[in-house]
Image: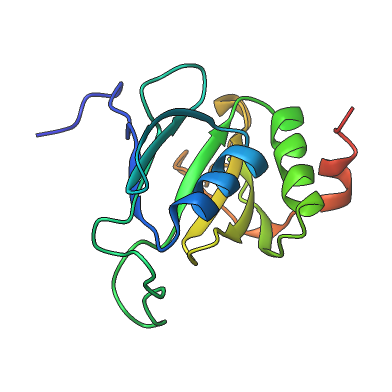
Length: 159
């Protein structure tokens, strides 16, 4: 069995320690719209009016600490931006908010910037390149790479 090519991951739902802090990060820094709030226990945010791309809740995690390194759990959630300029704008917003980047990589197929949300969850902000320019090996297979992303060149896209 194969998943149809049109299959997508629709949303992520995160356990957070402080709902207001998490909403502020995803809304005010990353620019997602708050679609619904369920008191002080859950919130749903989206881009473009979708019901939700990001769910946040404190049902089992209010006041909790992030899981320690070396344990299972979420490695990161990835947010795909439509183009390089949109990626540059959100990265500039992250930097303006004083949030430290964990890394920035050029994978050949994409450009990606990595950071942590206020609960320690990994967040990847990225944009895909056109499929026609994806790197391939001698047999025509995908040959992703990990190179340093020129962050200054990316940020120069901010108008």
